[in-house]
Image (cartoon, rainbow, N blue to C red; front, side, top):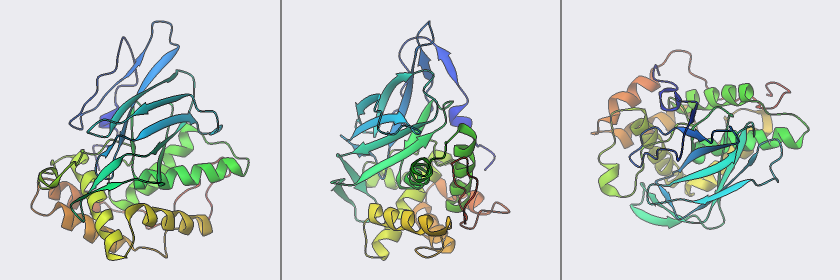
Length: 277
């Protein structure tokens, strides 16, 4: 996972509108000349989550909604927020996504997909995996703790390592149909898309939809801060490898899964209280 952070190397760039990469490429933050506003690209994905409404709020004040946008055919939209907002919570509802395991389009319905992001991010993914980080953060805030850029980074690293992806907050390749699924790119965006496709298949094998599996994992984490009762890392790795098989993403997936000292399920608490479990 030597490519960590490539997609977000541009921090704050002064100018006009952000560049939106509809093919999974990086984007950059835009600020006005007075430094009052910045723009964050959101990519909501299970496959690509289309027509969803995404809102943003400070993660330490999650009821204070400060922006909203609607996702396009790639699951992308831009949120304008005050430049000094700090770490944020992004929540997406409604819309529909392409489910790789069933080759069907599925309505998100009453499910909510969430993510958290440090204040330095220029783009952020919203996926079932980022929802695990958001759930941990909201639990910490509810208990009176503060979430910081640094604690988000640690929780992100733990979850990324456990699921065998480079960075769960980096936008994955948008998967909109069977043709996209068969043409996963040979980079981290493609490897992340393979992990999400594998997650769908794993959910199907367990008789649930991907968002129910996410809820079950959130409950698992709430018990002791460890993913240890709903899925195994071996199951996750096998499902991801199967999804990537025969595509350029396969080599990247193998490299990610073979990293030494991978996290085996203990996910740090992104609040100031440290690690639970």
